[in-house]
Length: 421
Ligand SMILES: [Zn+2]
Image 1: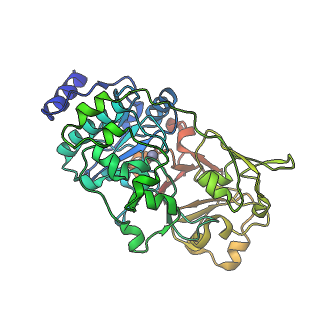
Image 2 (image 1 turned 60 degrees about the horizontal axis):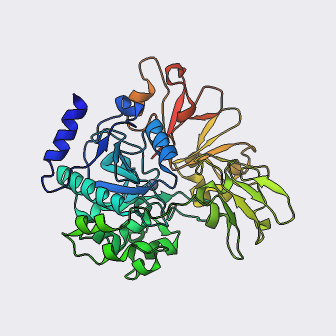
């Protein structure tokens, strides 16, 4: 009953649109737990960077999007559009952080460096238009994930920076926006302008803001679509082939001269799932690598399934600065000792920083809440992010566990939660 009602409403809300093909086949089990958003100011567009089946399963399992547009243009509803979905990760726009709380997230099956196919552009255009009308979101505030994601300081960037992700970057270019019927775009990054962030990826910022951003895209949009005046777009889009080839994501990258591990692995540079194979045959995982200067050209970087993990681990002889840059003594940097003790960065000095034991876990850009009691359950303590994939639980006297690996029915009293702030 509910499903039928929702679909009828979606169709009514957009008399001019072709009816969208909607499916609840991947509706997320997380729906019942999620808080309702108080306001909706942005629509954030993503590319899944993986094929449909695995993407839909993961999005549904973790509740990481409101919608996902498949290759045939079919739209899957994942999280109820009124509730919070975790799709932005660490994000900021115009000084506002954690855009999950004020945005709708749409994933499209595809890759940030490939064009979508015509069925996808058509469906996305209709879906976006519909949601813009429902929530009164202006064209400029329909943005790619890459535009709002940012990274906290690390060994490559001493300050918080734009460029943590290239997810969906093409959506910001004039040619793609024309396809999507969006008339406005941002011409500069307000957070870089206000010096809240630095530019961590100049190529990305050219794609997002430069006049010739379109020309820099590593793919060509179908000419018939790109040249169509807006208004007749849906029809023209229909005519273009729906079978642009997809390809597997790049999992193995050779480091070229002058490139760093950050350039190829991004946040996964020190993850246990990232493997470095040196030209001499030696091999080491990202979490064990300490000698970053030994990354000579020709080193092969093999990226695992997991994206970069938020938790970083202090290796023997390593200064925390090497992992979190200037954020070492920030109030939103947390250190978890191997014995389970937690220390806030702002409570440390140069001497106590150096004394942190190897194996200390570091969370940058995090806030803490707790302790959990029989009255204060995680969902009450941290209603917006208690079950987010990048939220971590610190059980009494034990190490950190990601929210995704926890039996939520058995969270003991005295547990603390760390969530992206
Ligand atoms: Zn994304």
